[in-house]
Image (cartoon, rainbow, N blue to C red):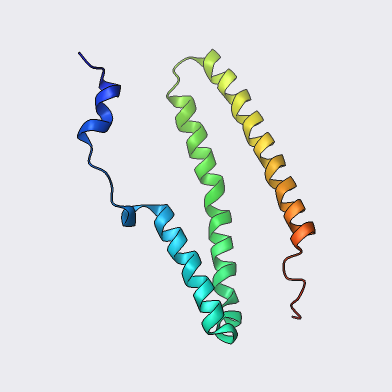
Length: 119
């Protein structure tokens, strides 16, 4: 007899690639590159679109992290396990934040994005 976890992938059909988020992110990146190459003046005027995207990402990030942590803690059941999970989660977020900041600083200092533009 097989376990339910072993049967989980058998009955479920594969999702088509164009229904997945990563596919549309790649399409959007390619469209942005093409837009910048084909119409650079219009692309510069569309700066508001990039700023709006950044604001949406900033607005969504906090609630997503909060809901993820709350659901994780609620599904544990035991208060002792929840305390251990909270410490692990805070440690994980702290370490990942430090790594992301370090990579961002390295990329900013090495690549110096925007150094050739006069604005």
